[in-house]
Length: 203
Image 1 (tube, one colour):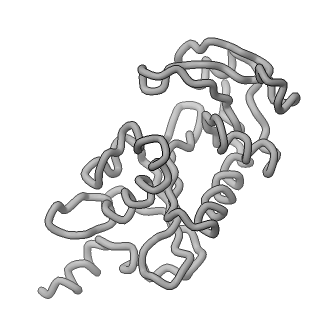
Image 2 (cartoon, helix red, strand yellow):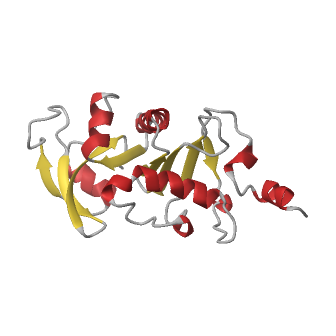
C-alpha cells in the first residue's frame, strides 16, 4: 500500500477530506492520532493553535502536536485559501451545561481570524453553547457580535462547578449591559478577569 493511499484511508491530513473551500468540517477524534514520523492532522491543528496563542507564550495545555486532541472532544476547522491545509480552528468540550468553547486557532491572516470569530459568534448564539472569555476576544464578541453574557454569580458558578471571585460590572465601566465579570485562576495558576458569554443550559 503506497503512502498516498494509506493517508486517504486514515484521513491523516486535512487535504484528504476534500472539503469545499470556506466550509467548516467537524474533525473526528479518531483522526487526531499523532504520528511522530509523519506530518498529519495533529500537526496541522497544532500549527493553528500555536499561531493564535503565540503572543501569550502558547496554549496552556497544548504544547505540541502530541497534545492534540487533549481533553477537548469537539474539533472543527476550515480551509479558506489556495493551499491544502486548514486556516482556522474552533475547539469545544462537552460539559453538563452544554458545549463550552475552549481552544481556537488560525494561521494569522485576517480572513482566518474573521472566520474563527464568525464561527465563534454563530455558536454562542445557540442554546447550550457558552465560553469564558476575556480581553480582546471578549471585546469582539460583545461589541461586534452583541453576544449575551451570564450576569449572575450563582449561574456562573453552577455552570463551572467551582467558585469565582465576583466582580460584577467591568471595573473600567466598559460594556454596561454585561455585568458578569469575575476573576478566577487560569489552570490553577494565574488570576484572570473573565466573563461567561453565550447560553449555557442551567437546570
